[in-house]
Image (cartoon, rainbow, N blue to C red):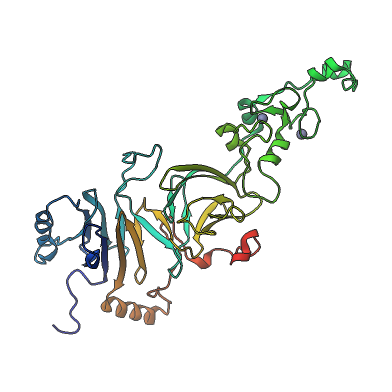
Length: 422
Ligand SMILES: [Zn+2]
Ligand SMILES: [Zn+2]
């Protein structure tokens, strides 16, 4: 071959995919089986092949990968040791953008888990966002996203950016009757001495004051008698104490949990409701986190240092944190031992020069897009001609794709409470 000849389908570049499969039924030396693929601009499909399926199935699919004469010689990437079969993803080359994309298959609404409410499916693909010694990918969280911290799963159940109006609040709470002006005129300030008057005029069990316009007395729990009512503002301060991102969701007196809807309305936005599944999915917890006073919330196993505590031994003491910036919530791994992963729900741009590690069941995928020599040369020529600094391999640029951005686009959270661990 002449040096300048460009392999068909690899003008701009290609994607190296290596699939490592853990096969517990094999002998120790063969436990991890690695298979490497090169994906050209014709793209590839990733197909799961159930372990129980006959190996002939794989042989049948194989010729498609090697037949270069075919105009659509799509590479067939096989992921074995998986209880699921069928297409799980595909890699596509966008000739307009000159980029490869990884498209996961998303099984929305098809519950395959025995755990009630568990949001993930067997074939979900998780992208590694960070781990000790690994590259950090900050990820912009959206409602419905699921991330994994070690073996624990966390759902971004609700994102709340604006507060409800007072009218909305009051219509959903049990509000004490506010004594009208008419009432107050007749018996001014004598109520405290008057037993009957006192029972008619409820007060806040925290500050002992009566209800007021804009700060009514409400009741959200089983408490009765003198502790029945509390000011909206007093309760808000209890639920979300000054200087804390964590939220108290139970009444301190009767220990009853406040109704979900009330919790959501009381928490000062911007706030996020997380739901976590840990200890092999046996423990489900809900965590409201408000970013009204701090732009950072930390997640981990240690009770002391975290806003979201996930009691699972696969979760590091200080595993990850979330930075709130202009109403966006960015997840960062903190060099955790077992890593942080995001469930892929949307196509991922495979930036040239960058490696992406993914998990699918017991298989690991390493995906790396490489720019061809021809393409590098072309870029250098363009740079010479226009004097621009073109995007170079290995350098992140702010990406148009939702969910990703370069690290340096985020402001330093050094002013935050959790800066000590940086
Ligand atoms: Zn009060
Ligand atoms: Zn109570």
